Image (cartoon, rainbow, N blue to C red; front, side):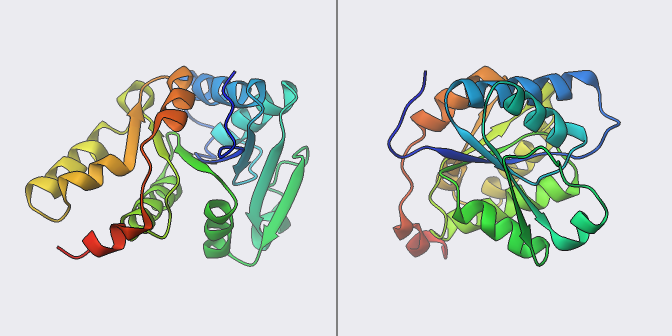
Length: 198
């Protein structure tokens, strides 16, 4: 079992779509159970469908604690997971994203659509600026993120990013590799702000 004085809550970004291939749901569910089995609390977008639902259901079924963070307008649509251990309602999407990174010790991106991509790229931007220092792990199920990772390489090649910025995140292929990546991630300094302009 993974234990740390520094890692207790993990923020997870993932899709709410219910039209995905089974392997994506299986990956999310496996990760949810792994977090519960290791005593790690999940903080996520509070959805009850798609990978969000699979992640939360698996963790809750294994005795885990799951905190859902969701904007008021989504609650009014009934999109929230009513079995969450705790629901945090925010004023809007921006407040939701901020709440998640401010209240977690690590962040993981599963496969997702434009919303997940927004969350992932924002958190990388904040880490580049030294505002966020948590470990960031990308779970690259079935090579889903390969095009984005190639784009990151291109950004370095064309000098929009430093090679060092690729150390802000760790990429893994399987759910069972997420926890070793979180606990083995190198520390990131708030002083990275000094390198944001280059």
